[in-house]
Length: 553
Image (cartoon, rainbow, N blue to C red):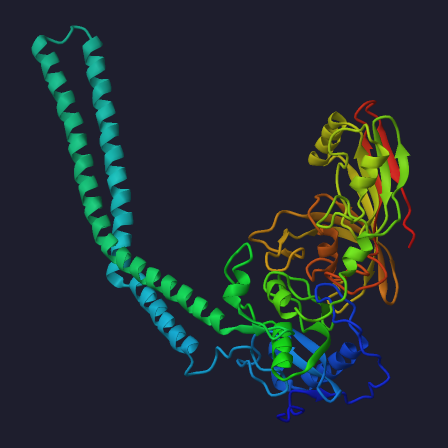
């Protein structure tokens, strides 16, 4: 077998023989890094830190990955990879190579990319052509002038009519000849306005026709660009021929043909884990465990913390990994195991019409993909078999504990939901936050306003987006600050998915993820977020109802 120990297959520089090998491969979408991967990641971090020439680029942030592997002789080591490109290249010696090198100068991708760039240049030339720009400006000016002239003529027409009307009502009355002259004048003026309107319209249409010649040329170039880009993407994704542990091969077009979008998203196949697995399969290395970590600053929209481990993304990687992991024994999804728990919600308040329950962490509010998963809705439906309507007035994330409002009839549900929509329901959460390098100079209290939307390529993660996000507003009050943690009250004024988690973790929010937040921070024994207080108007007697349940942390 070809010697592959240098420079890509790395042996551990520190003793690792005492670390037991994992029984199954990591479930990549929710995991605690195996000790072998932690050792590997620490070595990769030291290497990255030594490359000072990358410092500026990496300060903007990049995802790296490690794969613990075993060769045919039983030697355990690791592979390293980065997502996308680094310093303008995708083939640095320390890291595994790309699945397909789209940056090779003589490759079809670079050649076709140059042709598409040439089309972009032609489009820019056409759009900035002096004759085209002058025609557009001329059309704008003449349209304005024509509108003003027409308005002036119509004003004069109206004034002449008013003068004729006054003459008709004056004494002595106008003679028949004068009345006939006034009728003729009216017809002439109206016809003159019509002629002016037609003349202006003809002139403007002539200008538009000249502009259309230029715009047709631009459309042709854009159509060619679109056609070439689509063909290039199709050809490119066909070159990404992904292996799995069974030796089966599928290209990205075949893999994504089974998804809702049908087409691979940009950057598919260039993330760290697919590159790592591809190299391992090609070189007869057995994958043992994986981990991916973020290095550098957080992007403006996403929430990433330097050095933290993250799951593989859903949009680009999940379809690929479903194929590439075939033939490996994989750990169970820990979230599924959590949702199978037997702990039941506690009833904190109840009367004839409604109830408030305390949801334990790890329980779904409503049924998920698994029929066996435990959830609040199923518990409530069994407890109140005669209840009607949707029951749950609002929801909590699976990982969040705390108070949920339950309506026992459809009408009560409607009235309570109206209070949420009118924002008259008061809620208070308590949370522990991990202090971090993204931490802002915190005030004792304040307001966070960051619009939030779903990351379409990494569900269920949310991102901050000024363009696509929905308004999300949270008030906060800091209760206690220690060396490593912050205790805080949150008062959400809107109810977006993951709102408190994003507002806590995002650098433009508090910059401190909630302790145990596996999506936006670091894993712990639980998510330290609890809905401890709710206040609403009783839909039957009109009195304010205040319910509190202290957190157990």
